Image 1 (cartoon, rainbow, N blue to C red):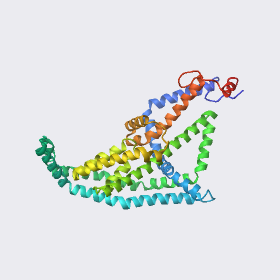
Image 2: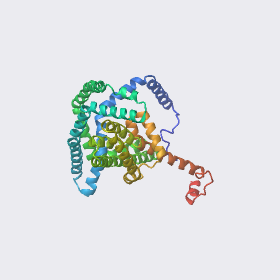
Image 3: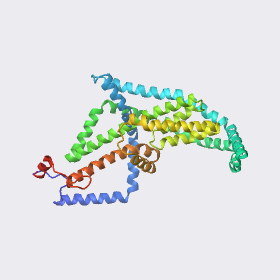
Image 4: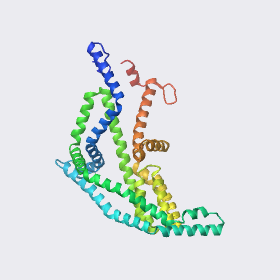
Length: 392
């Protein structure tokens, strides 16, 4: 006779009933003082946040470490540390190179945009007046809205000035949290170096505290979620980088203004599925519309061509079947994730939903098999394995 697990055991002795009553009282007290307990949990999470940052850094760098360790060093002894060092060196080099190349250009573009803002407004006004005179369209209201361009510039400057203390405070908080940042980096290094041992410990704890089937399913779900997240994010980052480079090259060839600023913005927003291209394109078109309406039209056509290229060729080649859900469910996951958690929810919503969708599919197939019917509700023929299971 198999031993009953603690979760399926019915209370029989006085001690059992005492434990059940005590657990119910504890649960009631937690619900009654939920705010207090959530505050304590938040405080505890705040303490552990550097280690959470370490987990994120380790998760991002792990594919690079795997590549160096398995492909370059062929899993030789004492080379994992060198692989981790190389992964960090590449990541730091990319960040420094990106900052060195992009930040000065972006700053110059923003300065030029604000400096020439009144002339851009005047150009738009002249265009509206010309269209009104030539085609008889009443655009007086729009012209009046653009009359006081200096007031608009002052308003923008006042908003930027008001935001400066917050920016300075944010930079100060980053500097003051240097210990936390250092802890995150150090924790990520230890996690990457001792990855196999840590995973073994987590698997051991799972098997120790959960029934055998539950432990196996939990580990399988974690593996499935990891495959979804890694495949989606690695593929999406590569895809977005390619789109950003293509946008920059095309804008440079077409001699469009603010090529670097706009291409970086397009590349970053492209990480968000479906809505990302529109989030990046709309403000970019508005900026070019102030400079030259013809440039805005050319850029609009260009971004449509690039997104068609991405959606039909580049994206499928890079992402492949890593998402595993239809376009409708992708849209659904982005809308729900964005509504619940904002931009972060829009980004992580797809791999999270893909994981849940896969688990739901498994559950549906399991239920159909248990009932002995197929997806159409017709009786399913029993296989030899099914007949053997009947007599177990």
